[in-house]
Image (cartoon, rainbow over the protein chains, first blue to last red):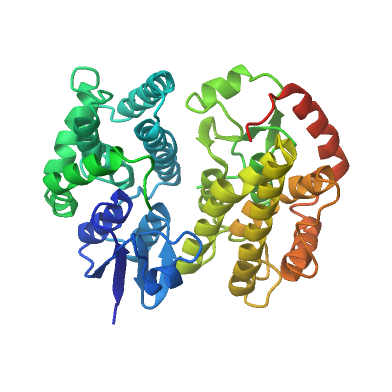
Length: 221
Length: 232
C-alpha cells in the first residue's frame, strides 16, 4: 500500500512544485497544510535541519528540499517522466533547474527585500541578464521540457506565476512582455497547462499576502 | 554509453574542492582523463567557451560536450560509466538523503569554512566557527544513520555523499590551522566523522586528489593576499 503525504504551504512555490510533479504522475497523496508561523511538531520532526516545507513522506520515509524530492518522485513513479533519460540531457536539465534556483529565484529574492534604490537597480540589471540567459534555453519550444513540461519548467514555477503577482504589487518591471516576449509566452503556456492550473494558489489571495509582506522589514518564515 | 576510446577532459584546479569531486568520481570508475588546470587569476578561452553561464570550474568535457556544476558532473559520471562501482546509492530514498546533505553542505556549511578565516571581527569569526561546529554535529548524526555501521556514507565503499563532504576535508583541516588550531572535527564530539575522514582520505580514489594541508595553507596565503577583506 502506497502511502504518500506532503507537508506544504499554500503560498510556497517550493511545495507547489512537489504537488505539480505528483499530479503530473497521477500519484495520490494526503496534503497536510502547515502553519509556518506556528510550526507543527510533525514538521519539526520531519525536517529538523531546515524546518521548512515541502516535506514528502513515502511509506514512512521522509525527505526534504523540493528539487531533491522531484528527483525522487521521477525515479519512484517513472510514468510521465519529468527528467530526460539521456544522461547528457538529464545533466542539462539539472543544470538549468539549479540556475533558476540560484540565479533567477535567488536574484528575485534579493531584489524583493532590497531597500536601497541604487543597489536594487544593480540587482535588477544582474537579474535581467539571468532571465535573458534562461529565455535563450526555450529554443523555440513550448516548454523547457519540450512539448511537455519537465523538471526545468517545474523549477521555474515562481517565474511562471508568482513573479507576475510580485511585479504587480511592487511595481517592479523586470520581466515584461516587450523586454522578454519569449519568456512571457512560456509563462502564458505554463499557467494554462491543465495540471499546472490545479496547483496555482488563488491570485487574489496571493496578491493580498504579498502586499502585506513586501511592506514588512523582512520575510517571516 | 561510455567506451574505451572516449575523450574525457576535466577543466579545473588542484585546490578546488568542487574540482576534486569529479576527479574522485572518475578515479572510482577507472576512467582516464586529461586534467586541464587553469592558471590562478585567469580564465582560459576553453573554460569561457565551455561554461559561458558561470565561467567556473569544474567543467567535464566528454567527447567535446561540456557538463558543469560539480554534483551534476558526478551524477553524470555515475550514469555514463554504469559498469563501474556505483556512486549514487541504489535505493531512491537513500539517494534523496545523499542529495539533501550534499545540498546542505554546499549551501549552508561550506560557505562558513571559507568565511571563518576571513572574518573581519572576532565576533564574526566566532559566529562562523559556531555554525561550523553545529553543522558538523548534524553531519555526525547523519553519518550514524546513513552509514548503518559501515565505514562510509555510501556503505562499504565511498559514494556520492562521501565525495561531496570529503572533498572539503583538505580545506577544513587548513582552516583549523588558520584559526589557531581550533578543533572542528573532534574525537569527542564527532568521533564517527573523525574515523570517516581518515578512511576517506586514505581511499585509493582520493589520496592523490585531496591536497596536503601544507600546500593548501600556502595557497591560502596567496588567495588572501589577492582577496578583498570579507564583509562581517
